[in-house]
Image (cartoon, rainbow, N blue to C red):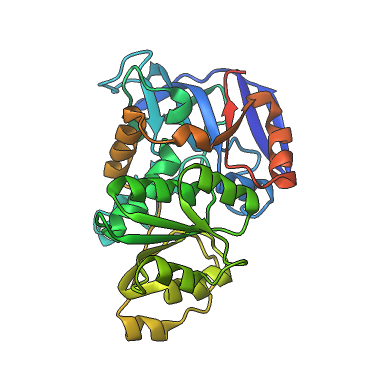
Length: 338
């Protein structure tokens, strides 16, 4: 089979290797598609070299079919369509309070162990979610990032009719916006990239650039000055942290979606003044995956519009180089059987 290998120094190779027999408790997946996410790009840039076991196959957004299974695996048949929830929680401890998705010794499959950017992939069977036979595997490759959005929105306790401001209109920001709108919220997206602004508008979202407009006043005008009930910080930059407490209304909830690796200034006075809530959100839980599968299977939301390119697995080096040259795209999928 073909597998891609991250070798460090912005370099991927494509190698031929033997197809591995699944061990006890494992399932071998014939990978259909593997999406490229921001974490994969960080790995490409060398930002996670201390964590990734170089040389390594990366990738965790995927879809595929069951190809074989090891001893002790039940509930699956050859050909079943599946996705992987790439969290290895076998190191959970009592102090983790049974929150498996954020346990102290959590291992993220595709970062801490081999990932999906290969033709066949062996994973623990407990990571699998079965799909309906009619599921489009190209759309199913979006289930992992969609589950991030579903988790974020669920933790926000969003209600129909509330106003949402999404700070950042990249792939996760748009998925958050789609999920929030599906619940019945009034969604405003704040984004500075003209290409992504146009994409958000094409998807029917009220979209504004904070470089061209006063975002706080814009939201006031849309809400009779009540401002936002929920703010999702997805941009991961200081200006978003500065504005999130301004654009949130009284008793607003702010969900921290972006990952900030270093301490950043935040206006804590606004939390006192407006009784705001700050909610941390990390990856997803099983119920978020099941909800995402339902949304994809229903095929009523514009997920396909987020896929901007599909490339054969053998083009992996070019794909990452192109993402660097053209960061305007949304979701690139690797066709793992080409």
